Length: 550
Image 1 (cartoon, rainbow, N blue to C red):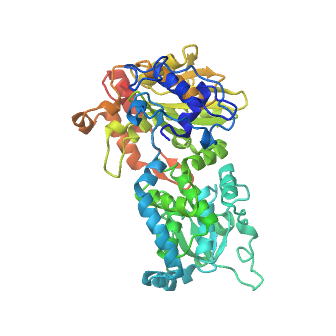
Image 2 (cartoon, rainbow, N blue to C red; image 1 turned 120 degrees about the horizontal axis):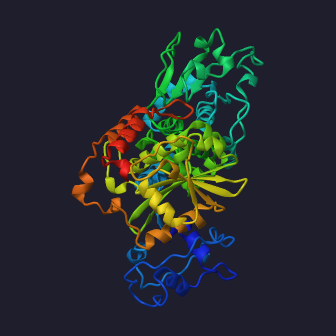
């Protein structure tokens, strides 16, 4: 209960369970507090050393809830917390904690209202739903999960037909459809009434979802001479394109939210319409995908709240696990999206001895496309450290920022890993955690990303280890628990006064400007790294203290 599944994996991989998968409580406490301390009511004065990177965890250990160790009542949560092994709450966990009570109440009320619609629902059904009834719902080219889920959700709500814009779908979409228990929507061109008249001799009206740019439209629709007559609806979360126009007034629902599927879910609730479990699941998966598990700069409270509601309606107890599985299913596609997605897709935060460490993992069959983007990947790791301190739209707490941010690139074919190193503090910890690993340039000609790291120290060949749970995390924790120190104290130990100081150096200002100018183009997050790259380069040469010295 205290450690969670990820923490338990470390325990199970360090201690030998019996045939039932159970671990003796005294063995666990001896391992946690050090030899000879298992029966003492208070922990040792200094953290106990942690076992070296372990072997694979016992089969079934993660899923067998009955095998969790029985902690001695003499050891409080606070005492155990002194030794780390607590994974930081993810953004989806934070959302569930913050909105769960409200979402549960809404879900119950929502289900009751579906049987007895309220006045506002009658207005919605009378004035809105009839407009889109019978439409073909279609997303954009370079199809992503949000566009497919939005088409499915829209077609369900407005009694239309969901279609897909491309024949081939990426692995994430296929995984999500299978998890939700849904069939693949038909290809737009092959649906009767899309290009050629249906059995009634009619061409059906069209509602665009998740896009409005002409160049992103399915080719068959883009080339239609009567397109502006056919398109009668638009549901989107992107800026309106200059070339977006119509001959008649459109039904439009365009909101500055992190996912178009959030808008569809909101429409269900607004109309007092029940969301079938499979549809709730596909909408949930799409929001997690488009917001990178609620970590994206485009995420809003609307997305966070609706994820909580959809978890209830879709019976999903672990949105983090769902997000990780989806990310792994689309990793090779993610590599083509860019550094922003690569550093945030499968990324988790941990706390140990007061230090906060973020570890992202990319599992690929070819590491070269990833390393080709090493310069911007390192910049994104820098930004990620600061970004974690963002609490709300205008709130920031430096104590929430990461002390370390890493990206492990796992070659699943060779079963070995490479570690991208973004700064001096990351370098110091990595050298201590993997003392025999070799360092080199992450990319030929790369510039040093800070004052305390050289260009030929930006990548570490960590060798034949591939597991974050069983190998990466224990290696880092072993060093942190032994009293790791550097020129800065952990961010979590900043005083109220120190945490309130706004960092206004060129690097931080460049980060703020880049985040403000970032946008989602229906495929991925678009960033301009020019100003940040220049600021870090100037900071490194001038020897000033900023994020690059971290």
